[in-house]
Length: 205
Figure 1 (spheres, rainbow, N blue to C red):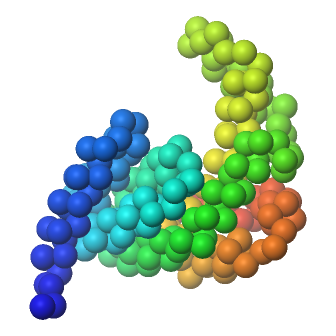
Figure 2 (cartoon, rainbow, N blue to C red):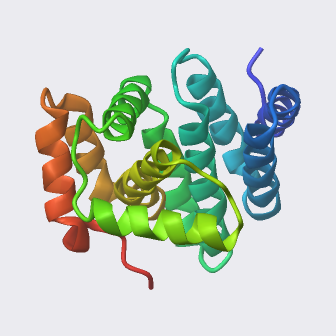
């Protein structure tokens, strides 16, 4: 039996809520993305579920990276109510992002950055920002922990270009995602991403 769009939406809602109940902070990210999409664009709910299901099918996909991806969906969805054009872009962007090979490559690049195997430009700036933030919040982090969060901060900055770009302007950013998927040299790809950051990053309109 072919399901109607409303049936697909309701099924996706139930599955999202079941998945959300399995986790802590990741559950919060799922709930926020789901609630934002439910309010703005019901037709995107099955697409969100397919993305979550695909991420769940990748055993070593970092949970904080999954949270980061969902946070961008929530962020970009807040623009959607401004124009139907943004709705179509959001739907297309989620579809393109839901690529198992692409998510695996993104995860691989993320871990290479976190492990320090791919260097970050301006790493000292990220480290200083993390140190200051920890100090202001009275967190007694050792240097190893600060380095981890500094690397994560840099990784999020550059991976965010791809994620936000796909969700806001999928036609423009799909080639960049394909470049990530097809590359045999993640270090060279990341050098390019850092070098061209100002040209590549999505511009606010």
